[in-house]
Image (cartoon, rainbow, N blue to C red; front, side, top):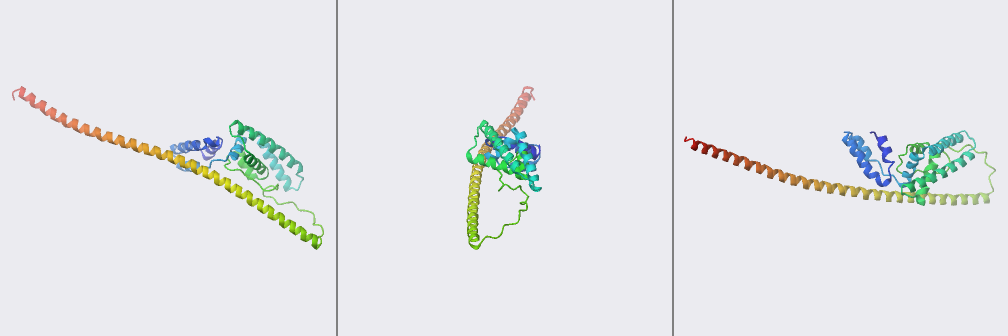
Length: 271
């Protein structure tokens, strides 16, 4: 077992089975004498439901997902060459919609229907996979622990193609209005980005709170097991001490009885 195979197995199970599966894999790594691998497996994070849904897609609908990733490569190549991407964008939307329906069906079959927010996170991750090669590779491997996103429609790593020369500068009044409109739009975009960031942070905090609670439950269970083992050890030690005392008494009595038997034999022989 190596980290890649362990992660592939771990991120393929439903979120409810993640902790038990991780404990088992950590124990197997330790049993094999690989403490470093055990630590690395133990550090893997429990996936969100949306990340799990995308991981599920990579396993159950890999062929359909490959269509999106291949299209993403073509989209990035077309953008880099300054070629039209309208048709590719339309096809991307169609494939993402198809994959989203598949993800919803797979999740429902597993007893985890996708709520609206989770559905949007799955869609954002699929959209990001089409424009960002790093996300594409993460999605292909199927070991996501968090959803991914990519702002805008520009492929990651590229800048916008050169645009035609700007038209003549507008008059002062028009320019002033435009600047005010642009400033208003920038403020709205900044506020919306801040809201999204706050929602994301709150969601992540809630997820980690759940992780803390689950880890605390595991710690309590292990502490209870340790207490029980200590009690059993104490009882075993007490039984051992009792057995040792019994052996000591039995040996002493055996010695006494042996001497008495020897004395009786000698008397019987008249010596």
